[in-house]
Length: 227
Image 1: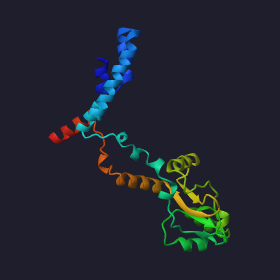
Image 2: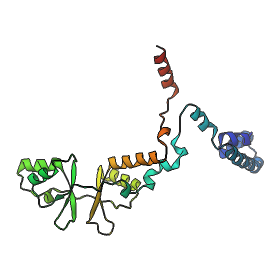
Image 3: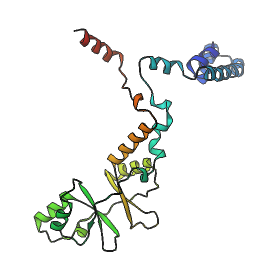
Image 4: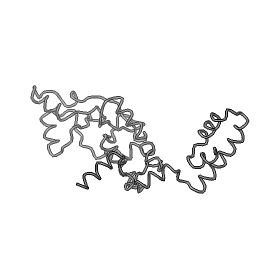
């Protein structure tokens, strides 16, 4: 009984616990573990798909854990794979009026700021530039730039997501690992989502994104179609 349970459900330890609870016999533990592991190994070799996964697939429900490379895309990809390197940079010495004229053709909300030596100083938003222009317009863009933590191009994307969550920001600058004043790109949450979507497409997992329809929802849909 325990071996059959372990082979069908693929839960050998659970089978051991159930049989032991029913019999309260310590003498059965060793032979039960041997038979369970043998049954489990043979079942996985003959039929790799567990019964519960097979039942879900009959209902066109596919669990993402069966393809680990998709669920771990954020760990396999680096910041370099997702960041935007074609940047619109504002010189630190420009005035708000000059900066607004420079960024007029673009629709970005945030822009990197560099000094005359091309050293990265921080990020400035279009909203802050306009606010400064409305107040007096005399501050330089370098004075308006906000310093913030930076990422390295070789950081895993999962690390970038965690750091963004910690700092409550949706965009972070990417600098060279050796010369951390040298800006090489910007990484936003949109870039991360796009990179993960491309990874899923390359792995051929687009068609495995079926949304589960549970019993209550299925009855509602069938009732609606019957009307």
